[in-house]
Image 1 (cartoon, rainbow, N blue to C red):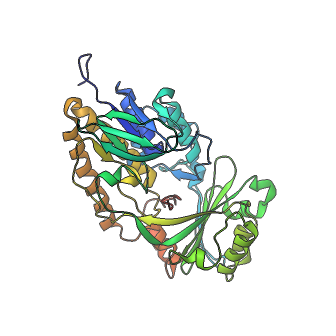
Image 2: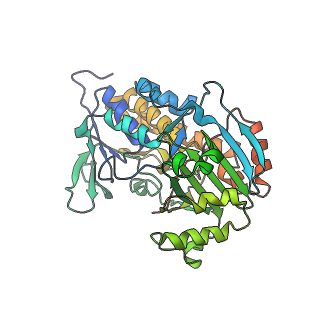
Image 3: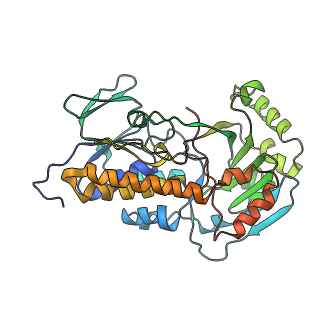
Length: 398
């Protein structure tokens, strides 16, 4: 319990994604200030990607506990649960149209991050701080060193790594590094799609469209601003892009031509997703950590989200990061004067949950999207689950 005599720990959260920001919000609610250090210069530095569906027992649960659900509800899109599944010839294997409010409404990543960041006191978010390393001093406290001319931040009792796939905080806990999963994802976008490419808008509809061929897929999602994101995915060796001359992504004409060669045997209605998209292709080689990844607890350090349990996109990443944030905040609050005991329990539970999910779901969504006979396998998978998941484009390279 926290009272006026409680000596509060000095806490740093590295990474201003949904998990890190939600943790900061939860701690702030309980009068525990924690400073979040984010490498991006501001909220508007980049688009944050497309949308995601919020899951009832993970993301929704955490956002409700943080008192943010009324704001979140204002921007939710239940029609975003519409889904079509096709093969590369354009044959429809499955189509679902949402008639009523479902349990996994969509939200744009930018809207989610905006709501989270605005719920935290401005002085507790330090933008433009790219972490270089964390060092522990002789007094047992931690110092944060940043790139450029940013001052070293010193004297932290607890440093939390919410800094994603290539976490610098994780380096102090384990030598395990992410490894290439065997697949690439190219992120593309259609702005003002209803007016500029009505045929693409009709193909995708209000929600998502998944088209699958052998070792290839295209997964398109409608976003809240009316745009469409399309994720072009394919299995390939890690050096594939370099070997095939796709290295300069500013050379849009060449990249587009190479991708059309790769998808040459796809139906023309689906190749237009490559032909007509905006002149901006973002490569995302997909990396992962071992499903049984865990580390020995070290006082004053811990991880959440992709920094702790990185897997190829399966629709769970952001939701699990927010559940991590909720459970970590509860662990810290359980005994604020001896928070490391609570963190050890949190880590044990989180790692067990990640390992169980890996054992129960050996085929990730991306595995099914890139499988032989993928449309049928994915249609069968959907039939055995209450709701289809959404792909989250993340876990990109360094």
